[in-house]
Every structure is written in C-alpha cells, then in structure tokens.
Image 1 (cartoon, rainbow, N blue to C red):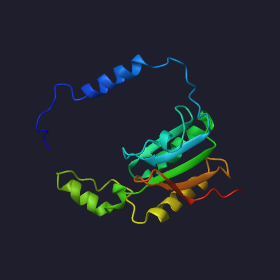
Image 2 (tube, one colour):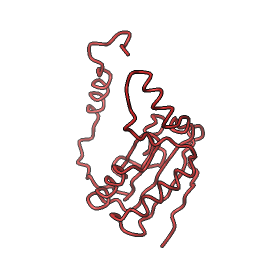
Image 3 (cartoon, helix red, strand yellow):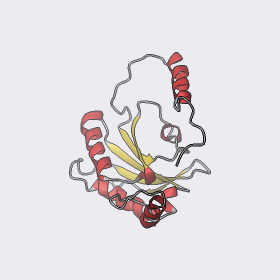
Length: 175
C-alpha cells in the first residue's frame, strides 16, 4: 500500500504540536506515581480521552491502552509494575461502545490482513464477540492475578462514545 503523496516529514504536525505544547509547559516536576492510585485499562480508540472522561488530571492515573481494552499478559505485567513501583491500588477496565474489535472475528481480521499479503496467523487479536462477557472475564483475570494483592479493587465499565457516560458493568466486590 503506497501513499498517494508522502510529505517530506510525515511527523511535521507532531513536531509543531509539541513545540506549541512545550512553549506553555509549566516546567514543574511531576511525580511518576499515580496520585489517585488508579490504573485505567482502555481502548486505543482516539475518541477516548481517559483523563477527561474520568475527571482526572495529568499524574492522577496510569493509563494502559490497546485494541479493545483487553487484559492481555502484557497488561497484567504492567499492572504488577504499576502496583509495586507506581502507587496503583485499584484498576478500572474501560471498554466503549462502537468498538471496532466487536465488529469482526479474529478469523475475519486474519483474512482481511492476508488480503494485503501479510500472514498474521500467529497473532491472537482478542476480538470481542460479547463485550459484557469479555469485560467480566478481563476483570476476573486481574482479580485472580497472583502478583497483585488479593482484594485489589477492580471494576469494569463501558464508555458511551455518543453520550460521554460510563455504565459500570462489573462492580468492585469488597472482600
């Protein structure tokens, strides 16, 4: 797949945006710990701005993102580090409406990519057939992860990209 026209610097907009940001950057030293003790596992969808959605500020939470907001082995590894090194003591898994990962199966994604000459059969894309059931399973994966303290508060919700509201689907279960 060849682009119609490639700019000389495909990242010119990013460089320019960063230059503007840096001009007004407060320069204060921000701690690396999660000030609110929260980790949010959400989708990479660009319609989601996790800090804004949850009424948080920069530095309040650790944000983890991937396609479909799925709790993979790497997410579990990262949550372990976030707990022991960065002050995370609760986790919110946040899926969203109109997610592309709910619209295709792994087999359909493999077929689509194969149409471009790329063999992805070694990849599990973690597509979502039933969003509520997948969310419940992913929350349970975190709750039962032996490298986090038993009873760590974990909940799961679905963010509505049309209304901005979150429906909590899996509530925290106090020990």
